[in-house]
Image 1 (cartoon, rainbow, N blue to C red):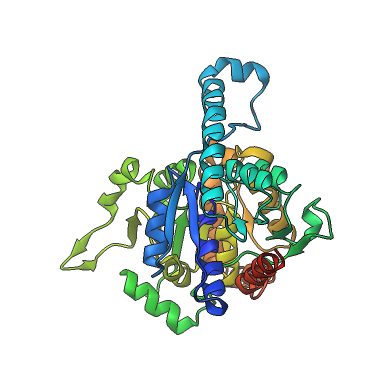
Image 2 (image 1 turned 90 degrees about the vertical axis):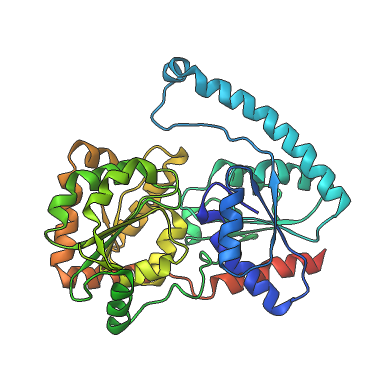
Length: 386
């Protein structure tokens, strides 16, 4: 189970596929929060999976790294939402408790997100074994709490980034679908053409994740006229942010089903492997699952980590990749002060083919092969020991 973003759902899809390969009759349900329920259904259906999706009532604890105590008092609505969500978690605990008593599972797999907390508390009380997976270099609050009673802990990054007990932690990498693999030059051109772009021109793909990233979108709006002079651009604006970016559609001109300009904007794509495969360079947040997909495809990436998330986990992700000379990093706050910082990073990458190749090679080294299979084997091993 998991929720809050596609990064907590798409890896589960890969793991479930592996489990069904060896246990085709295994009964599996995916539990998620109300907010992400529709997206979870969409992702599983688009992946051809007949997977039961169930909602769990849950609330999150809003923490902002740049907030002081006084700032929380100034934004008292945040405090009130946190108090409200305490009661949501209490309700979610009893909801999960009754479900688990009625149909006690052999194993629970927690991929991450605040929705896992009430279910984890119920599982602890009923002594249902569970496995957690941590994608980010900085574990989130929910996983830190659940790790104390976890039977096994799988990690997306090498164990040196975590303080989990060595005897139950294992570096598996982050599961991805088989479609996320390096493409040939011929395949890349074919994908550009399929998306409507000139296959002979460089292509930049910009994404802030399934929901979107406001600062990245606004910066692209600021620099788009200059960008289109040096590269084609595909902007994945995100489901939540797409409506506020519709003015950019003036740059997207179609005639008789043919794209006449070198810009496209979409809300979201269920075939991100095609977009990434077509790209010469990618601008992305530093979410662990997206970065694993880009690593698997060996792409040249400019990372713009979200600096406001608890624990600075995207910033820590970005620093780990940057240290290995696997990505270029542009600070979010600096980018909004001066959008040309992102423009210059893109221009540098688009014009330097050798740099793109070096970054792609180094990023590919972060891939842990057979992550989905390894994680599925851990889950099955724990379930069979019960």
